[in-house]
Image 1 (cartoon, rainbow, N blue to C red):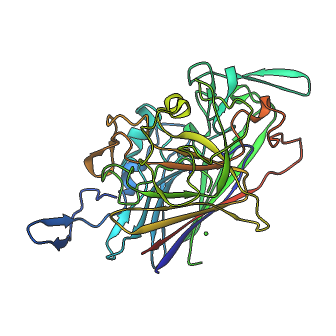
Image 2: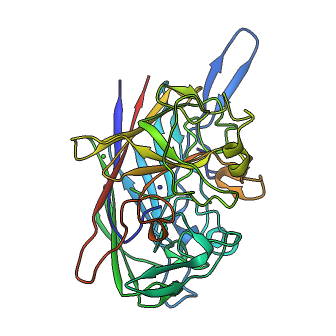
Image 3: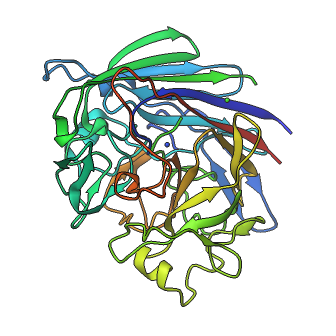
Amino acid sequence: MNRIFLASLGVAAALATGCDNGNQSATTTTTTDTVVVKITPATLPDTAAFRDTTSAQATALYILKNGHAQAAVTNYGARLVSLIVPDKTGNPTDVVVGYDNINNYEHLPDTYFGAIVGRYGNRIAKGHFKLNGKTYTLPTNDGPNSLHGGTKGFDAGIWTGKQLSDKSVQLYYLSTDGEMGYPGNLQVKVTYTLTDSNITNHSYFNLNGQGSGTINNHLLQLNADAYTPVDSTLIPTGKIEPVAGTPFDFRKPTAIGARINDDNQQLKFGHGYDHNFVLNKSKDSLALAAIAEGDKSGIVMTVRTDQPGVQFYGGNFMKGTNPIKGGKKDDYRSAFCLETQHYPDSPNEPSFPSTELKPGQTFRSTTTFSFATK
């Protein structure tokens, strides 16, 4: 199997993690008995389309390359814009959903495409939590709840970027005391690295290529014997329940859409999959979280993490209204997310692993996405 790796080390208080750009120069043609399918190799977005100097801090696009893969990262929300890896025929394939210009990221309704989210990834019930006896109130932007840090989280901030090498970029952000209602100053550093041998963010994946259609036929395996069921607003109930005998049992490779229409209350609450899975404990520093395989491309993605959970989201709220790279649309269930994390609403649920970061402490987290072909 051919392998390439995307590595990233994130330092933060909370955790959430193609197509051509019009420069078509070559195509790969595959012939069957009666059908000819033309596949255009994916290319990276134009860096000029990501320069915006109208704000106090300019936006930019950073390009990462190694012998096997290419990636593009913008300092707007520290977002992974493109990740191009070869499919089973060697055709360059962009496996993450994103836009091809900064204007769309800044002005279209926020989808969190490729973003680092925070200060708290996922949901906090009713937009408040208590810390050291004091109640903190957050903006609510997901029904009655606060989602991904509020109305202007890390995903909407302009980070300070520094290209470390052809294969690596580092981004910095200072979240000040009181920003979006959260206490304390928080210095955040995120590093994206392409290596030959390894993010925790909100990337939307389609391993057949972004904008290529449904992900319901992708195979998915989750290393989780349990998950956290939710209420009708997608806040965990506080229970941890086994996946055995439910549509949430992905312990063996299973098509994402195989049971998505089952008569199950949890699936109805999430309009499909939008749930936190409790990862099985491991002695390894980076435990296996998930393996996904594109049914057409043969691209296999393996996710490892040091975090206790992973949010599996099946693209249930994608509406086909956003113009993603290559002139395509973000159609319903045409991408999925695997967001490594602490559990949602942990500040309000003492039985969950703690997310409290005390003054002077440093939180470090590593999640790796590795790619291979079958």
